[in-house]
Image (tube, rainbow, N blue to C red; front, side):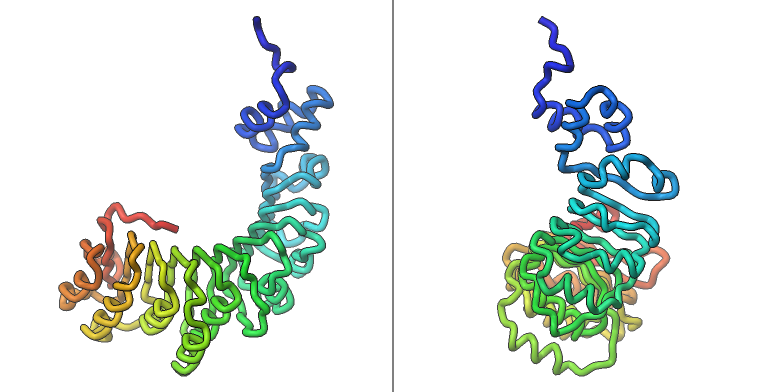
Length: 317
């Protein structure tokens, strides 16, 4: 006996059929069929939409403003206040008005936030890194100003960000002690080593949840941060300094080797050092048993050592 489309249960339509269509396609194909299919569309929890030059005046935004869950906005002058059920928000050019709308009372269900511009809005950063969003787990920012007055966001699990100096990264880690994934660029800043030493003593074993680390920084900051972590599975380091291989010594790599021996779950490593380190090749490969491949990077005066072939290297992030 043939089954009509109308006879298919709502659960199957919702989970097995609608999931293959974009919001635009759902609207054009199903919305005008009848009230039942309109209601099912409104039940979906994964509606995704990008506001750009072609879609800014689309009727979809009005029809589904209360049910869009994943929203990307390419304009700074677009009002986000009406999208109260958004779970994932991406602002490519966040304006002051948009930043002021990033508040828990306006976006109470926010789980992931990405802002593609440097953020110096202290009030907004304080709200984000002081645990005001109960469901927020993932943040991706450009460069931010850190503050040791943040009361903390222990619910955060993934952060991608750029900060300044050792103070910046320590302030971030103290605010987010339960991260499992961190992608960070630490720009140089004139400061003393006492800052990192102070916090490494006062915050022991705070970062046992961190398993995936990508860090672009100076070598000394890299070593200092590794001393605060214990359960890494994946480690990627890019040297941000302007030095050369003459700045590295065997002692540098002995120090790194000693720290890596404590990471018993480590399965992937990739280091990029400035300079062509042929002189220290043996020292580099002896840092960890996973490291088997070493190669200069084409069109760049730097050397990559990795646990996987350089040509097929994969970024675990």
